[in-house]
Length: 477
Image (cartoon, rainbow, N blue to C red; front, side, top):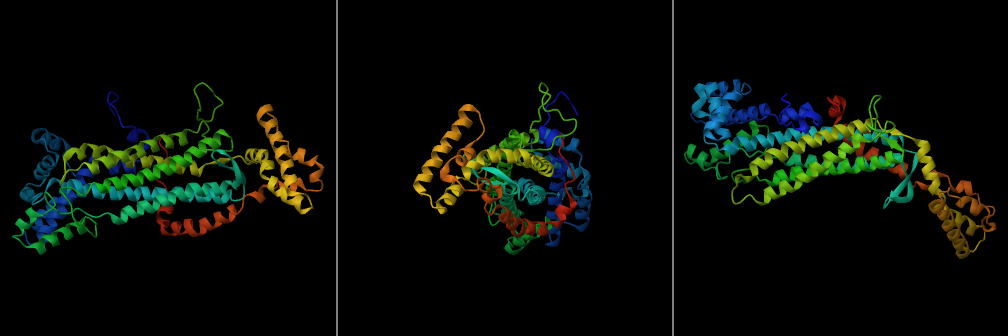
């Protein structure tokens, strides 16, 4: 690796070999050649002057690409597709004359991009399923552990640790549905021609519209698609890129939200992400255990979310049948969006699989707030014993304000319970029983059970193979 040249951190530090390889030059240009083979096979089957021997020769040389030769051709021709046509022709001289026959550059570039997007979405899909599975396991383990819930980042009615994890998992379930939707809607561009009118192929087939239509379907099938786009310009609609990056952004949004929650919880010493034996939290402060994985998730997620705008603007500015100002932008946004989401999900999986929970800290924090939350229960109990509701309410309000002042102004403990116990209006009320945390979590455990049974388990059944195969790679750095 040259150390005097910038290296992409997504490749060097974050993304998996699987995702990096998917967007590699080898994969890209081998796929170009597979598109040319598919075209030649279909043209042979439909009676054009393409021999079976030429098709077989092309197929034998799909992967042995002379990148140096292609680079030299591109310097001369200033055209990447024609450079690779010539390099392929050098490897297959007997088939040189039929390579790219009737096609435009976007036949290989766009069909290849659709194939790469499809494979990348599948990889993201499987990683999503694994993270959902890890979070579900964590949720079940802490199904009944009450914890302080927050609204407006202020203490609110309690929930359970497991129920909170269901919020994180369900966000990813919604993202998975969007990824599945995008996968199900992907179609080949196939052989649509220079401006999408198929004029060149109509000429090749001497005006036979049925054969042109058959060619389009045959090529799509040979590329692994069961359908083609209804209409295109020179390129497939860049709306597809925008939709894909929106889906990737959705994954990033969910991951950022959960990682942000974990950073706050780690600051409270309630839950921590995994921390390795020799890991250093700070070069200066040796005691620190920083949430560096969650912070990295947030950093990469912000990057992915920022890519939405590029895709939207590219879609909006494709004048008429296409302009070339999409090309350089797409070379960056599509691969890097997928690489970053891949890294995010690797990190998320690692974090979800190793979360450390501190129940005593959680209980202590909840106990500090629970007296305030129990006042309605205490009020009802006192009214039931014959007290005046309005008078009791006022007493509780005054005691609550005084207790809050002790906590906020003096840094003391919440003494509301002691104040109520000393008030004769609440004599005979079992105040300790009113503070049982489990009474305040509502249906959190039952909702968790329903979520696992009705949402997660069907996903596990559907993606059993992905779960059993596991992640082949872990976090890089």
